[in-house]
Length: 485
Image (cartoon, rainbow, N blue to C red):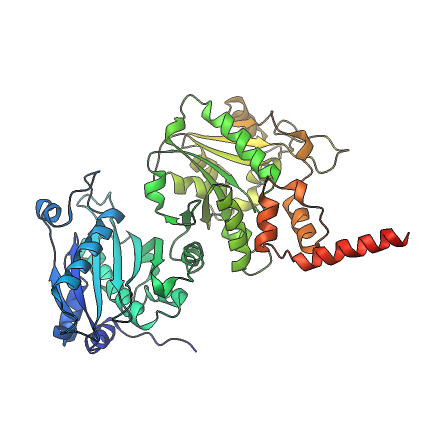
């Protein structure tokens, strides 16, 4: 049944009238924008134990401690605020007096748009809360990027979103995906972007935060999310800021020896570049939302299977809604002006020069390439060979429409497109789609196409539709047929 969306005032009042919810508010940066909704709704004395805002940096440091990097709008600052304020609740509110109260602490640290309007603003918001007085608390934390052009509008949006968070955690907690969607209740999505979210605590033990990242993109809350080898969501700005970025796009369904050779050899070319600092670079395996919809709808288990393999290989994964490469590069330029590299196969290179992908741009393909190469970007091209009888196809032999050949030649001459020449010729006929089919058929003809230990992971966790019983029965049948002969 479709959820009824209450107004912000109705949500605040419903929380206020719940005699079992009691806690504190600590908001720095954008003012007391969340708690004022609870005061205005009425009955806040049964909900709000304390509210505070340390605007002055010295006061803030005295309360929460100074950050190593000296910044205030960070995840570390938000977590310190939650830790400090929630511990005060436990110290100062006696359980003898409040035996049935579920404690909570709401915190946010927000920087709104600046006077020149060059810095749009961003911030962190989180809630630590109990759902049972005898239970350990849970956390929901997320990062927002502000998009409105006036500070007071951004403040109003933050106020509404904060109420949505508190209401959702107490009233929609059994459905984390719906809780996530509810953060935009009474807010247009063009006003604010959520690009990182994290759920933890006893109530969310079954929640996979990588899946929550995917929900952000599916629901149009952001266009790209990142998670690390441990499966934890990473704030894009924290990871990519002023870094050299090397990215490989693929289906990774599953990741094969070809994918690993591409990233390994591409990495070698990239770090040899004069403008690349090996100690200041990020390597990303990128999967597009369009790729995840390869069979019509997004299969969340299929997504988690891909993520499981890439994380086990120690890789950082970017999920994006950028079908065209120029949009991916444009996204990276939010955070860095350093040299970037994209590794791609010859097929992707051919598509890059196909004008049909740029019909939505006024300047067509020239506008797209203007975005691509307004940055310090290099393309590293991995060769293709469908069968052993065919010639190996490289950037030097790829067919480009005569109308675009001068542009292609220009980029080749200036070494903005570079062939990966030290590839492994023995693996060129490995394709993920074939490997996936073999896994599902249980025919045992897929192990040698995968990096070391990946086959064991697929078997142990039964990923990509693998069924141990199916493979076993097939082998038994082969043995029986052999013995019969």
